Each structure stands twice: as structure tokens, then as C-alpha cells.
Image (cartoon, rainbow, N blue to C red; front, side):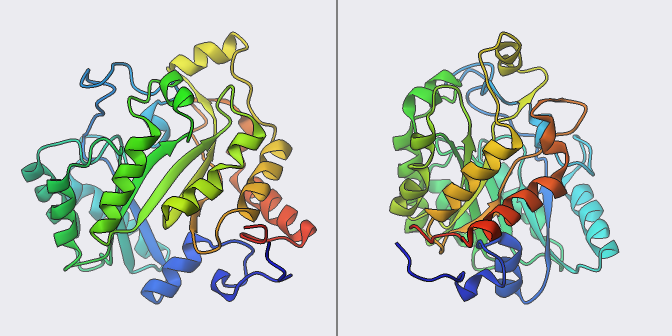
Length: 312
């Protein structure tokens, strides 16, 4: 247990290791992430390992909000750069976000990466995918990109319980995630893990084992999401049957603060909670007020005189 009563200096005045602070320190100023849709799918949608996708997933909830599907990467990048410039930001980091962004032949992936990197404003690249869609040849090719810009890999773990991964039709187990992280680190590529808190059947104690697990396998970043129920998913039907409880804001706030307290201070927190468009969100509706959720979490850390890693 840490005996310090103040957050480490690497937090930049905050009580957790925020991604915005890390980006400013790494790149010398503010960096805008540009979410990209490369027209991919997933192996648990097309029948390679399953059909129907994850039970909670309607990808419209993760879709870039300022671009439409069907636009080229160049068109999406141009729109994203223009939006960043209106905010006074001149550095951008393309993020291949929608679906599984290494689930395609390598030649196609190389062309997409080259297209995204073909802008002078680009200072790095992030690629979101599943841990069962990252063969060694693709990792080697991604490693080659680091001669041009830093590259960050993002893998969906979602849950560290195999029973939950089976229940949500994920199509891979925890061991596959651990293997992907190990092989990615072997190429000196940093890894961000995506985790979802609140799946049915997972206890609070089990959820608070996740930070230690992430520390043991050495991930570099984490995106924390609350389970939210969105339209046109199998989980929506289960929610209406009363089978999927969701957190109140107060419950989630307290859980996230507990999570941060036992999370290594070296791990960058890229997200504290998830969001979804109002038109498809079923529950919890409190997530629509992003400013309030952020404020609740930060105020609770302050009330506790607490910070990320203080109980690590």
C-alpha cells in the first residue's frame, strides 16, 4: 500500500494517470484522436468463430460521430483534421476503431495504414482489434510502422472471466488475450486493454481483481466502460426481461474509484466510462451527461483524498 497522500507527479495535477496528460507530455501539446471506420467486421459476426457478434454490441455506439460509414479513410481524416483545427489542435492520432481492425488481408491493412499516415498532422497511430485477430505477420508489419510514428494497439478484453466471455458470445478466452499482449510487447508495441464493468453474474470482488490482472500482464493503458444496454442487441432483450441489472451513477462512481485505487499508477487511463448515442441508448441514461459522470468520479477521489495506485 502506498503511504503517499498525494498523487504522483506524472498525473499532471489530476488524481489518475489520464490519457490527455500523457499525450501532452509525450507529444509536447494537445493531440486529437480521429476515430476511423475502415469497413471491417468481426469473426464472431461472420461465422469464423460465431455469429451475431457480442451480445451487448451495436457498433453504432462506437461509430465515429462526425463521419459516416462508406467514406474513405482520406475523407474521414480530412474531416477529423478540420474539426481538430477548429479547436486549435494541430496534432492528430488516427484511431482505427470500428469493429476488428486487423481482420483483413495484410495488403489491405497496409494500404489503410498508409492512407491514414499520409497527413503531416499525424503524430501516431492507434489500432483497435480483437486478441484473436492479430497474427504474427500483422504484428511484424505494425512493428515496421514504428519507424514512421509511434503505434498503439488496443485489444478488447471486456472480462477476465471465461464464463462471461462465453455468455456474451465473445468467441475467445482470456488466455488468447494474454497471448496477444505478450506477442505485442515482444515487438515493443504498447497495449491498451478495454474492460467492461457490470456484466451479469460478476461480483464486485471479481471486478476489483481486474486491475491487478492488468498490472501482472503489463498493459500500458486501459479503457474502462460501464455495461450499457443499446438497441438492436441480444442484451437489450435480456434487459427488458429483467436479466441485466445496470449500475446507478453512484454505484459506478464508487466502483471506478475503487478500481483506480488498486490500478498501477503507471497504467494510462484512456477512458473512465463509456458513452452511446442517445437515440440507441437504453440504459443507464446517466451516461448521457458526460460532464456530470466525470465530475462525480473526480470529486469522489478528492473526497477520499485518494488517487490511482494508492492501494496498489
